[in-house]
Image 1 (cartoon, one colour):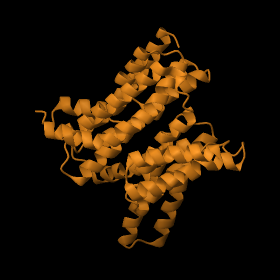
Image 2: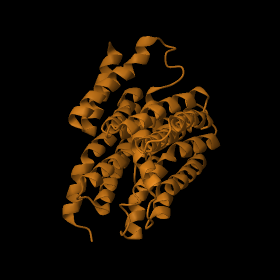
Image 3: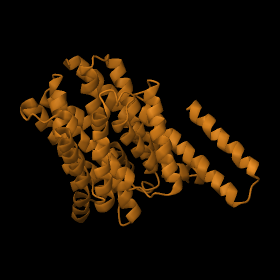
Image 4: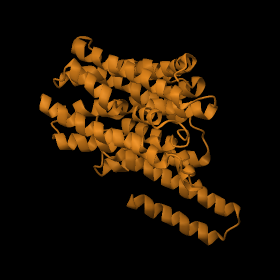
Length: 251
Length: 107
């Protein structure tokens, strides 16, 4: 059953995302229009694919002359981070209907993931509310993209400035994480990992590989600390620290 | 981009996206998570957002055009950090970032 009060809760939680999506959706539509996509095509992308980073990447790579296979592989690679979000919602989706869980999972984005995670942690939240946060966000994203495609470049917004809205949202989501020592290690290792990936030419999978390095490093750190709390020999700690470096290189 | 190219890109990207969004949730659903996995999941948010920020701000050739053009996104990013920590608001962070970035480009 859909409760109006839940829809209202969801709308309040979704407003910041919706406004952010207006700011980045219009330039994204303009960019898509610049490679010859019309409003209907932009609508289909937003409704069926629904990925801010992906919908920016496609016209950017197409303009740069990348072959279709390379565009698809890179976009899909970058979007594998969604697997991490999906896995993290598994506990919340226990006991809800398959259909609700499916539609909720199918409409999660970076931003709505951040909002829903925070709301579930606060308590008093539910998957149906979270689904409506996603749907409100997607509506705003889709409308803004279509508007962008219709007005084309008549607005004259520089794309790099508008795209910084997306970067700012990611910065906010990052710095409002709980700053435990393990989380800080995850962040620092991830940043280094992303930069090194780009340095060696792995630009497409940089986000995924960087994040995996960060998570692996934080896991090793926290298990080392647990072992230290139990009073291990110092040699064990040193050996494991060396393993961390090796694993970082391998990844 | 032609309609044929459009359909190829849309269908391929939409299918991989849907699989990434839905499969992990349904594979894990109803099962007890091992403690190690639960801990790994808790490290995913800081790592994923750090990766997205780093991907936007860092690039190997970023100092090629000089120190100032490379510094602009970092200064604007710093302003976003301050506003984000104070307000915890996505909207204010986005507004601050865009305004700071545009003003710094004008200087």
